[in-house]
Structure formats: structure tokens, C-alpha cells
Length: 165
Image (tube, rainbow, N blue to C red; front, side, top):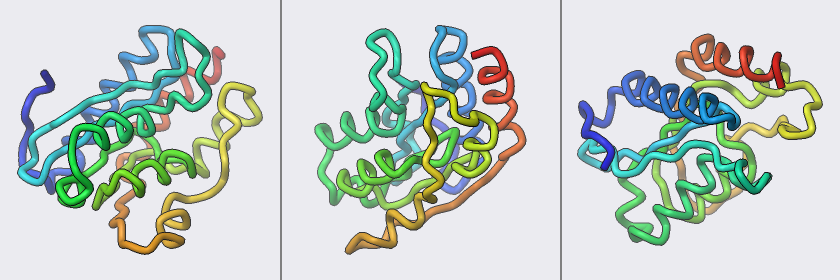
């Protein structure tokens, strides 16, 4: 069971936790992405590392998998008070999953634009240069977005990984 953490507005603390999850994914041989869901009171409800391996699931992004799990566990009304923290900006697919699950806030470390610059045209990460804000703006309900935060620290994980991939 994931540990509790300080209050819901301590964004840097929660991002540090996602960086640890991303580091664990990388140590396990996977892509360095991590996400967590914090409840309205700041409790860490779920954690998720990238799930590309073992089946080479191109849709196994940490945020998408986390939102699938959260959406089958809690109602959109509850999730509206929750925050999705992600080591990197949710791509269009992951932002869509967060929107459909009903999450009210997204906080991320590394921007999609900077991730694209780091990964180039790597076939395992054909990054879309589509900010999650644009995806959410197309929706019918608001989703607060905060980020990028601690971007240099978030980028360091990817610099190490994609240089050797």
C-alpha cells in the first residue's frame, strides 16, 4: 500500500515521488515514467510505473494505466477532488484518460515538448507535441493543469535512459 504524504498542495513532494517511481521503472528495464494519484486530503491512493514491458504495450503509459485503475475504483465525483501527479506531461492519450476518469487536477514534471527533444524519433516513444492543456481545453469540464515543475530533474531521468536506448 502506498504511503501517505503531506497535504495536497505540496506539488514538489509528490513529483519527487513520481521521479522515484520512474527510476524504479528504469531499474526494472522499462521506460522512465511514473505517476500517482493523490486524494483530496493528500493521501497517496495509487502509484503506477510505465507498463510498456513485458508485452511491449505502446498504450501502457503510467498515467493511462493509473487512470484505468482509478476509474474502476472511484467515481468521477470523487476523482474530481483528486490530483494526478506525473513525472512527465501526460500525452494526448493519457490526458484523455484523465479527463474521462474525471480527475480534477494534473501536475507534471517534464513537458511533452522537452520530452520530444530528448527522445527524438525513437520508435518506442513517438512523442506527440500536443500539450495536455490543449486536450483538456477541448473538453466540457475544467481540469486544472500545473507544470512543468522540477523539469530539469525530470529530464535527467530521460537523458540517461534515451541516450542508451
